Every structure is written in C-alpha cells, then in structure tokens.
Image (cartoon, rainbow, N blue to C red; front, side, top):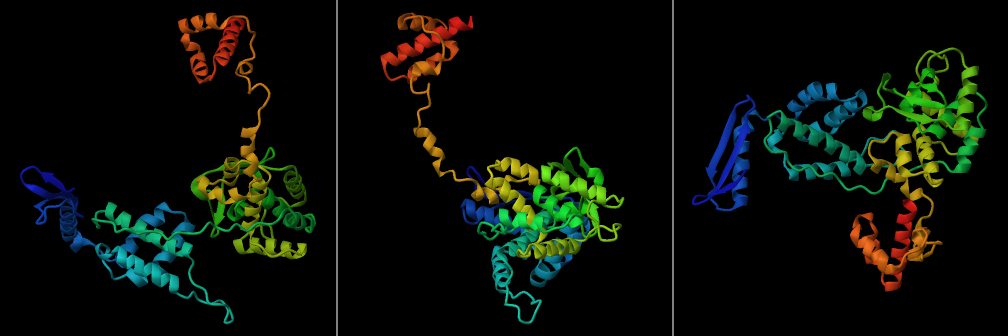
Length: 414
C-alpha cells in the first residue's frame, strides 16, 4: 500500500504474488508527492507485472466453469452461470483481458443489455427487454469471475461492478376467496392433495416434486431433498427444515396416502413411477385453476400465497422466514407490508394501565416505613436497584412512596 517515508516522500510499496507463486515487491517513489498519485503508481506497476499472464474473459470462463462452478454450485446454479457467460458476458467481454475490464466498460455493457430486445416467442408478442434484475444476475456472475481471478493470482485489481438499484419486488398471491375456490374445485385425489399441501406449507416446486412418504411423519413434513433438472439434491440454501401441517393439510395428505398406489413419491407422474417434472407440476396447477374458474398461476404463486396469508393473519415475520426456509430475513420482508395495520400501535403509549400511573403502585408491596428510614437503609444497601427508580422521581412525595414500597418489598422478601 502507498506510504509516506519521513524525509523521502510518498512511495508505492506493495508485495504482489505472481501467477507462478513467487512474490515480487513494488517499491518506487511517486513522481507526484500525494497519496493518490502513489496509489495510482502502485496499481499501474501491479498491472504491468500481471498483464502478460492475465487471460481474456473467454479463456478464463472455461476454467471458471470447469474448476469452480461445476464443483461448488448446484446444477441449476451452474447452468445459470453458464448461460450468463455464454449468452451475455462472452459476446461483449470475450476478447478483453481481465485486467483491461474497467467500470466504464461495465457501464456500457449494462446500457446495451437494458436496451437489447429479447427474442419473441410469438410473432405478435410485444417487444421486451431484459429486466434490471436479470442484468444484475449477469453482473453478479461477472463480479464472481473477477474476484476469483484475483484469488487465483491472474488479476491484480478487481474493477468496481455496481448492481442496478431495484424497486421493491411485487408479490403475486391468491386472495383468501381464490385459495378457497382453488381447493374446493378439486375432487379427491392427487391434485387436491397437491394444491392443499402447496397452499398450506409453502413448499418450493422442487421440494414438492421430491417429497417422499418417508418425509411425512407426525403431522410434519421433513424437507430434506429438492428436485432440479431431473436430479435430487439438498433444498435451496443447503438447509433442511420441518414444516408443520395444518389440520386440513394433514387430512388431505392422509386421504391421498390411503388412496394412492404404493410408491415412494407423494406426488409423481400419472404412471406413479417417474418423478414429476416442473412442467408437469405447472400443468397440474394450471388445470386446477381452470377447474376453479380463477386466473392461471404458477406453482410458486401458491408459496407466495402461503406466506402472504400468514402475515395477513398476524404471524411474525421471523416465524414466516423459518417456515419458508429463507436464510436471509430480508427476502421474507417482501411480505411485511401485508401485516395487519400497525399505525394505531403507538396509541398504547397514551393509555395509563392500572398500577402504572402511581410510582408506589409499580411495586405491589406493603408499606410500613417512613421515607427517612427508607432512605437511610437504601444508602446502606444501594445494590437492590432502587437508586435508579428514586432518581427518576420528580417530587419528594414520589420519592417517599418509592422508598416505602421498596422497604416493604425487602421485608416481604425476608
């Protein structure tokens, strides 16, 4: 780091680890004697040392995917990173060396992506552009690649990659009437059990698909697995959890257990042998919505409905976070605006509950000692916690009352 040596001035002074593992110390007097100039010189010399070994983003992406993402990420996350790199990052940064990527280039990339038109699924479909959230996902992959390059010694300085600011996410959920209609419209069977379990437990789509009968026990669902891209692994975030079943959910799942053929999966394809795919799950939910006469919603909307209805009925946000399996409560806070009206909560400060208006009544003990005697005894044993109470009293009368009550409490305690 840049430092000032007394009598000599500002120097760039930094030890750099080269890609081959050797250490090289940069120590050079700055031509302009300011801290900023010394730091700029330090960064320039660092780039010069590492630039011959700094690969292009396209070349480094191959190593990033094979040596890092393939071994550290779940398959879904790996596929997402691969798509971000091949479809978005490589076409723009591909031939650029990692040490040549600047904040200005990142800003240009963001502007082009926001203006880009996404492919249309139908000819008459309206023109769409990538969302700000999608662009942030691309930036997150880029930032992780650059940070890893620095850790692996092929990049000296990571350029600043700032995510876009996002508006509060909109939560889509069914009303109480829609949720009730969705359940009532289904005949007894797997679809009804699926709808009730999704609405009453808030399981993710992958958790519903991987749910096994051995995970249903003692009125709870033990969420230990989740399906993604045809493979079964740990739930999102790698954390297992237990979700209690409501009375209705318990009755429906037990009814389905008695009716369904012997098989390990609770919800499977029609043949009962194969795991349900995400598109099949979506088809079941769409069909249920059509039967109920409500708008078509995706399976994840039932999870939003579960959380929204809990919050609207006064369940604490922390408890909702636990049931949903969120690792960060900030994700659960998207439902906080649905909580019952709290504007009148501060009105309790204006009320005077019985016993709290009179200082003497705050301690329901017998009186039987004068203020003077109480004061002397309080001075001799101030560790009982009454000193602070006494100091907060405004009048001599209040002080006497507190002392009388306090001394009465001592006698009673003995």
